[in-house]
Length: 399
Ligand code: PLP
Image 1 (tube, protein in one colour):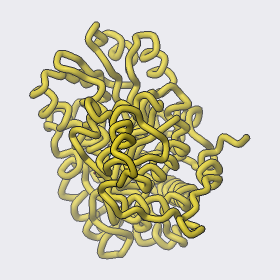
Image 2: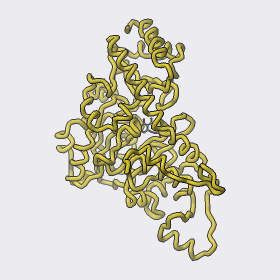
Image 3: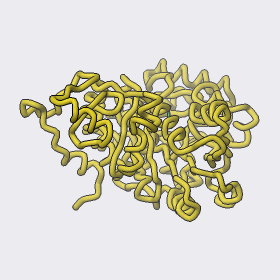
Image 4: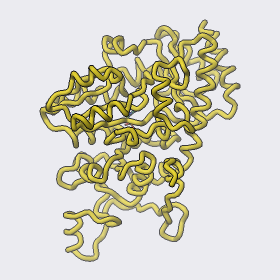
């Protein structure tokens, strides 16, 4: 049997109510019971195919969760209204007051802010470390450490987490390894390398049409079940519910994810190579010059390349802004946060998606003020895009 996630998703058969090729959308927040006793039973024991109330789960969200579990090779998955909805509920599910988390220091700014500013309210402490330094990870382990948290490919610095090594440390110390795989669906399959929980912001590559926010938590049946337990589940009780109509549209988009990821990666590699040849400071995991190139080459699923994100260092904030404005004028893409769209998206993380991180911490992690993050689009003719980009780079004296 093939272990290619795209094949497994393709093989799913969800017939609609009248034999539709797409599953029927159940547009209901609540579900009826023919007997009062069976309603009582469902509160006590979950039954496959039986639905109670949509905050718990509903058929459309269950279909989408099923496909995403295939994507990550986990037993189960639960979708939510945003990536942050998934991240925050996973943390609240695993940690209690007094617990500690060891987190990579280069992570999405929203997650960083949640860890740094919000979790202290619940007496949960986060130690930010260089996740590539295993000694630093180990020396920060304490009796009350519950979790190692990282991103497969980090936002925005594109560092690679050594999932196998971190998985081993987690197992040895009875911790959960939680990996945000938003930047690398299909490219990395963290559960295969030892992750216990895999999270995505569906808002990005997985949906791919920049028309909705969404999130997912993938893990064992036991863990995902605990998230929606009616009495103690963080997803159930905090309530970041994905709307069923949105689930339906995301599910349809997943069926082109494999094609899109290949094209994003081809285009990003093309631009990264040209940028490097032109002497621009570019970071892309597919380049041999990337510090973790060998590691990701060992971990990734080769047919999907190295994903679609690269960074360019424009040297300073002013020049980064001018360059991005020119890039938008030349119709290379949009000056916008987020990623995974058909058109390229670019922003300066220091002043946008990572603005929550203090200047001092940005300096330690190497997040410079001239950094531009570019999510490379699905352009049919990427050499045409490169010509436009070269024009913009020469206008600001970078090529
Ligand atoms: N994780 C990563 C790596 C992200 O880049 C983002 C958003 O930019 C999130 C999580 C949060 O996702 P959402 O915006 O869907 O809540």
